[in-house]
Image (cartoon, rainbow, N blue to C red):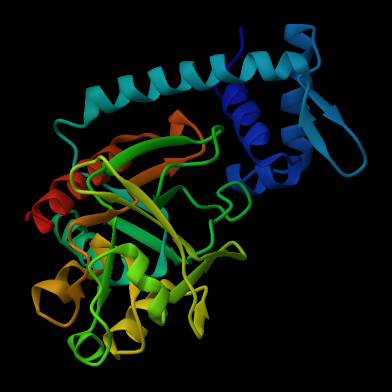
Length: 302
């Protein structure tokens, strides 16, 4: 019979792609991890991994076995959660990755609330506008804006009503031509953002009646890979920003930024919680997801 320990070792090795990395994660020696994998392969009478001097990857049999093990582990852990979560306070550590601007301005104050409600929980936060590699950087959960591109990840929406919005400071608006249509942006200094070395200078819009769409290739003298910098430039009156509504909602509420071409809405930018496999969807992650869903919806009520 395959022990739960052996399945855990197999899953962690498959996730990390390295015996030594799995050993560090499970607080064991590489030799012990190797023996466990060999024992499991002997019991199953198939090779689960293809090994070379530098790399370790799943065999075709391992690829078939992996989702079954993930499902079994998820069912097992859900069973434990159901037995204990009614009487047990949330506890544990969670490593979170999130975009720098949204993270600082929006998510971290909510995480502070969550920690105050759950004093036995601790977090390790990674702020970056580049997509964090969850496999390599030992991150449990990533919060990302926009539809997920990696089909190998598990992605759960936590705020789907987010979209991008045109905005600028009152000072900029007072000294530049009016913007009532996206094409008016061609006369303006547009503050551009780069993500994973790609310049996002094609701004997409849809009219409020959903009958007309528009794409504008914008230009400007300021570009950055830091979303916080785009927001700061807009606040300082240096140009027009195309920002996630979440990031600038409070600025607009306080009059520091003003929405432009309000009959046009930018592309949708839903917020997702992303992790590598469903076995990570434990009681702590579930509680955090439910909390963020509730608070983000409250925070951005029209």
